[in-house]
Image 1 (cartoon, rainbow, N blue to C red):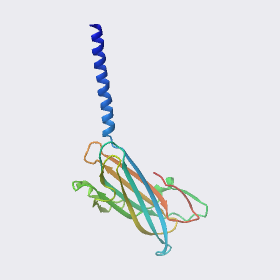
Image 2 (cartoon, rainbow, N blue to C red):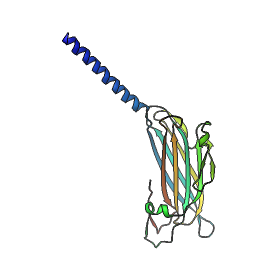
Image 3 (cartoon, rainbow, N blue to C red):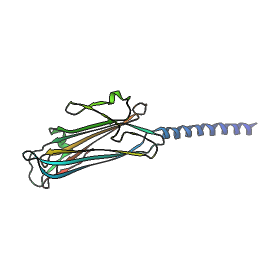
Image 4 (cartoon, helix red, strand yellow):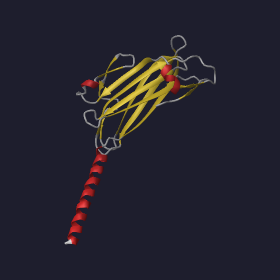
Length: 206
C-alpha cells in the first residue's frame, strides 16, 4: 500500500509539473515578439532652393519580422518628419542633439500613415505634431498579417528644402494586434542632419 501511495503521489506531482510546463510553453507561444530594424538616409541633391536652402531627399525605411510562434497583425504604421534650423556654429563645434532636441523649434515637413483593417475607425486618422489632421491609407506601410518568420517593410521617401546643417527628426509608430488584449505599440525617434561637412552632430537618439 505504501508503494502504491508513493507511486500515485509521484504520478500526480509529475502531471502537475507537466501542466505547468505546458502553460509556460503556451504563454511563450502566444506572446508577441517583433524584430524591428530601421534606418534614415539623407542625400543632398545639389539643387538650389529658396534663399540659402538646398533640396534633399530623405528616406526612412523599416522592416518588421514576426519572431513569435503565432500570427501577428501589424495594425498600423505612422511616420512623422519635422525639421529645425540650428544656430550658426563654428567649424568643429559639436551639438549634442539629445540635450538640444527639446529646445529646438520644429516644423512638419512630411507625415504619412497606413492601417490594416477597415474596422480601425479610431486609426483612420491621426494628428501631426502641428495639430493637423492626417488621413491614413488602407494597406501599405508594412501593415500586414505576419505568420511566424515572415517580414514586412515600409518606408517614407520625400523631398525637403532646408538649410545645410538643419536637424531632421523622424517619429515612427507601429501598432500590432490592436483588437486583442496583448496589443503592443512600438515607437522610435531618429535624429539626422541635412549634410554640412564642417559641423559634427552627435546622434541619432532613441
